[in-house]
Length: 278
Image 1 (cartoon, rainbow, N blue to C red):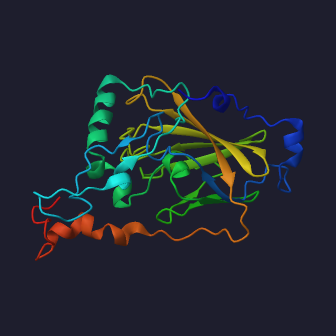
Image 2 (tube, rainbow, N blue to C red; image 1 turned 60 degrees about the vertical axis):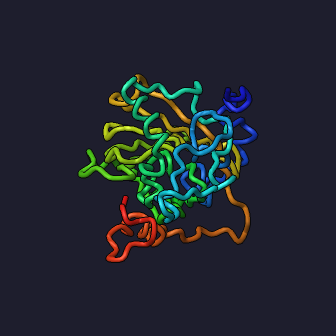
Image 3 (cartoon, one colour; image 1 turned 45 degrees about the horizontal axis):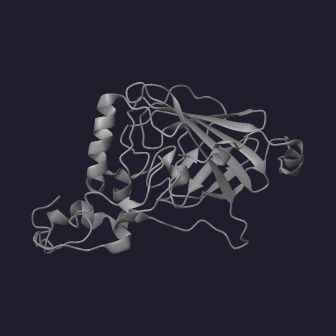
């Protein structure tokens, strides 16, 4: 169960908090900075106990003969989490829930993030990597450490997305002190975590960034996908500003790390254990 204290956080700042919030010349909350979510939602956005990672086949990661076993120890485990899903359970349609369960058993084979594809929204927000917001009265851009991903959030609606993409098209506006972003035009290939939670190309995400102090944002993302879920549902979590004066986004260009995983079976002389390919 999600602790009641977590769900009770009011996204609307008190008068005292509002006075502490940094603001732009236009009067909007100033979200500029490096931010990161804490917790283990990256593994599984629903509440869960610590567990062994299912179907931890060594093939996609460690090239070994098929008759050998690799004992990965603690690195092959999933840490516990109180979850970030309001209401605790994702309202899947029956066929979508069956696919989620199938994905969960084959996450090493299917999770696009393992192959360095862009993580999509909202997953990019709570991966174990920081991201940086660049905000002015004319532009709003989010840069992610993971894979060098960037979202240019339109402040004027350009119309329907021209193409489907991993990160979708983002259109933002201010609702009082909350920055609201509508994201659509997904390709349907991204997951929400490593537990196989998924969506279809019909997904629309409505994000809300509400500053509740100089170094804290309450992040909400409402997911609407009638092809996958029986109703709209929401994830919610705090984001924390990195106040280290040395803080910078690092470079994690993961493409070079997945070349063997994706294309190693095409070698003329395959590495031992990869003869069958993947």
